[in-house]
Length: 157
Image (cartoon, rainbow, N blue to C red):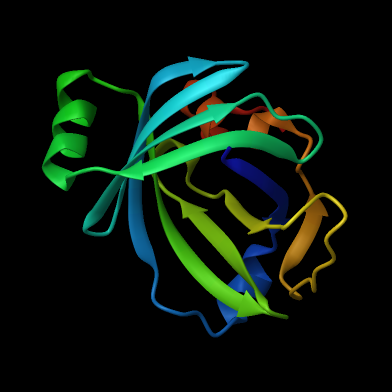
């Protein structure tokens, strides 16, 4: 069974700007199914593409199954089905034996920076980089599937 355990944090844009970044990879994704307890996502990541099925989140964990698919198929699915989607650049930052993934969103979610880390289990420990702000793991507004429906730019402060 595929399982994903991850924690998410907001990123301080000023601290991130100062950080020596690795090269980022452009991501584009849309959802074939986008329901509270399940999503089916199509994603392009650089020159690769994936279909991902995720279940409901319980704590910091959910079922996840991800399979690489031909990029041409992913692009056709995104275009043919008119999937509302998101675009972002992802940076992978190794720290303390783990990898942080920092997403810098564009388009309707521009201005949002989110860091996430995948863990072995919910009790796994990890080192926090200096650019993190508050944890948002349990705030569903920040799920990519929800950002498609309610983009960050539309939020009222």
